[in-house]
Image (tube, rainbow, N blue to C red; front, side):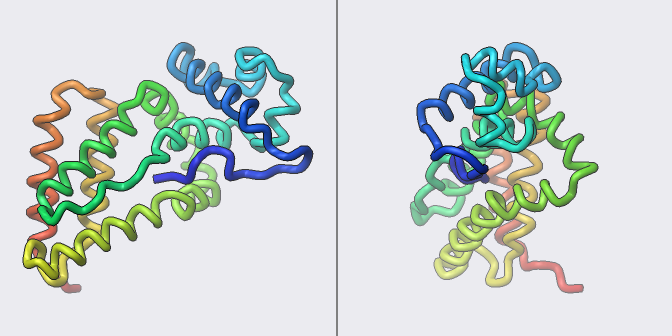
Length: 202
């Protein structure tokens, strides 16, 4: 998951939250209405009613702008543990699916993934910024479940995360929110099974 929008500070004036909101809102509108390729810095500037230099002071590239626009949608609180691991995993699954199924995210993610293929450093920065903290929160949830006897003592937290992320992302991109609740329940059951399985030994 990601940090809130506006974490990149470029040269120039202090950030203006209202202008940031205009630009990010225009970016989301273009992604939904026109698609990733058509969401250029110039198009965003026109939609937001600003000049392109105002955008470049805040975001160094289109990719950086789109990342803040769509991953800022995920600036949510992680689910609070309830003491019931299956219910908690269901809450996580719903959260991941909802974020990935947002129309702007569905438009942008394929284009971003294509760009990351040739820009591993940017992808690594994105992971460090958002994914690693989320993995840690999930590990803490599983550690509590181990203490309660709801998960295997040496369950593979990374395997739980990878299944959660991969399943919800693919489902969001291919089906959106169609049949979301049945899907989320099935994935929560699968996650629970992984959590109950001891990690494989090499």
